[in-house]
Image (cartoon, rainbow, N blue to C red; front, side, top):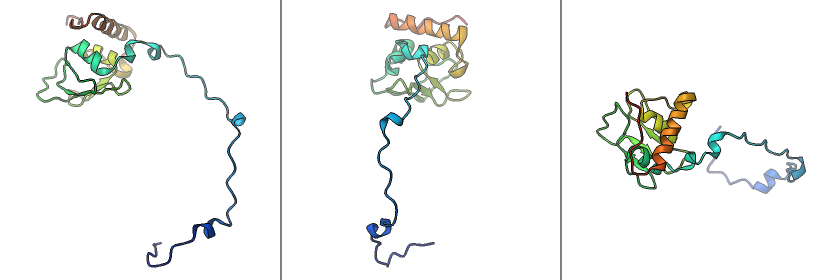
Length: 153
C-alpha cells in the first residue's frame, strides 16, 4: 500500500457520511465509582512528604538546590569521583545513584537512611531494617544540621 501524493485530497465529509454517529456521552450514573485507595501508612507519613533535596541535606549533609540536581554519592563504599547521584525535586522521583558499585540504587527517604548504613533498599527494606531507617530519618530531620546517627559497623 502506498499514498498517491499526486492525487486530489479526499473530502472528509463524503468519507464519513455513511458511518453511523458515535454514541452520545455516557450518563454519569452508569459509571461505577473508583475503588477506595488502600490506607497505606507511608501515604500519611509526614517524612515521606519531605522533598528529596531537603531530606538529602539533612541525612547526608550534602546541599542540594530545591529544584534538585546531581551530587557526589554519599553512600559508603562508593568513591564517587564525578557526581552520579541524581536528587530529584519531587518525592515521587526521590533520588538515584546511577554508578553505585553493585548497580543503581535509589528510592525514598527511608531507602537513603538505610543505604547510608549499608542496609537494604526498595522492596527489601522492611521490618526491623525499615524501622531503623525510619528512626534514623526522624532523628536527622528533628535535629537539622546534625549528621544522621549511623550504626557502628
